[in-house]
Image (cartoon, rainbow, N blue to C red):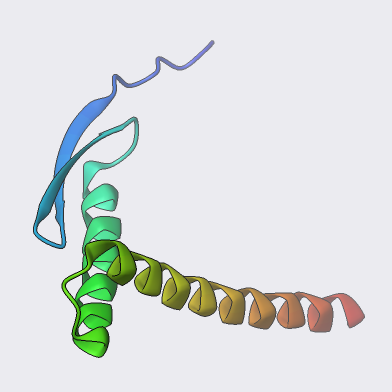
Length: 86
């Protein structure tokens, strides 16, 4: 028996003082959590740059998030390798 697909829900989130509409088939709270994560990174990047150029702030925030992701991926890959060796 096939499960019924939940209808998409519209979720409005605020990131760096701008409102963005998203549609999700999942939990709207997850979209809000991710938006808060991005908003936090953009605010920190803006403080570090002391700039009002939203595009530059977004790129710096994205680079910071990419660096965090790369570090976590490296740690994960090392852990998987250690587990495979056992």
